[in-house]
Length: 107
Image (tube, rainbow, N blue to C red; front, side, top):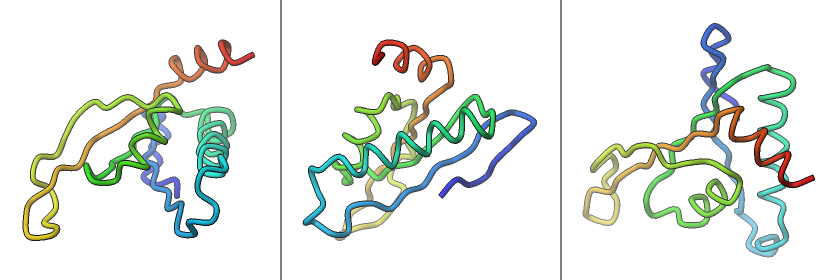
């Protein structure tokens, strides 16, 4: 889901739920979906920055976003209470400049 679109500052927040069906893991569907959403945000919505928040225990999403150029830029410490302890949430972003560099390198 593309949320909190701010056209003035040309940014949005991204939330995607992928991977519920483990039979589809490892086939590249999540990366393909994320890349399509990112391209839409930059090319069609003309945004400059995409933000995402990922819980520290969501290792699959962390790898997915990092593999696709997102950088960890912050942390909400002890943000969620899970399994009897407080856990952090990481802040990630991808800016157009970095995305364009990656897109050029992939050609």
